[in-house]
Amino acid sequence: MSPAFYIWGAYGVTFVALALEVVFLARRAKKCERATMSSAAK
Amino acid sequence: MNTTVRWFRFSSPQTFFPLAGTIARWCALGAVPLAVAGLYVGFLVAPTDAQQGEVYRIIFIHVPAAWMSMFIYLVMAGWAALGLAFNTRLSFMMAQALAPTGAIFTFIALWTGSLWGRPTWGTYWVWDARLTSELILLFLYLGFMALHAAIDDPRRADRASALLAIVGAVNVPIIYYSVQWWNTLHQGASVSLTKAPSMAAAMLTGMLLMALAAWLYSIAAALVRVRCIIRERE
Image: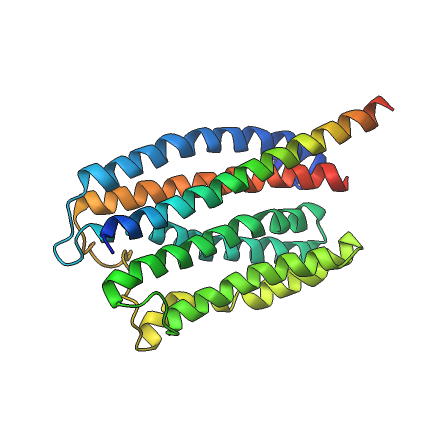
């Protein structure tokens, strides 16, 4: 295997893992905000 | 005295909520240019390693991830201990918010280490002390989150998982000193506060920039998560 396989394998998975965390976190934050707004409106 | 009082004011989740938002925003904004600068130095400025060739560039993500995995665990255990000692809700929330980010960095450290190990050691995995104790750290993070999720009453879940976090903290010095205490395949510490760096200045700069970016990212992620937890629980 060429070094590129190991380097991109390391950086690629890191990027995907952190991107997934950011996406899930953003979705959770949005969901919480919406729930707070709707309970405040009631 | 007044300063002390002001600090205690932020132990209330409601007071901490807007402050966490502001800090998270600034940390997220700081993490991006630092990561870009770290990657630029790591890939375009740092020279090729004489022994390992190009594959050593995994160091710019592996070492910061490994540092963060241990540091986040210690901070998490610290918050858990504060929660148990003073019965402060925010401390338990902070511990809960740090765990997923710590688990991700532990996974990244293991994954990148494995991909670095294959071309340099000839194997993806070996059951040596450093690798095994880091794997135990991942299980501790996962155990902390699973235990918290398994108990319905949040206050009981906080206390049980806090206890696990504190007991598990004994694993962090084991990880750190494992390369000195045992004869391991893993190399010794890359950077030491007491010794001059053994790597080129550009390599060290790239690694430190990436470590700073990982720090700011972790703070931002944990604070955004704690804001969600505050909203969900309060």
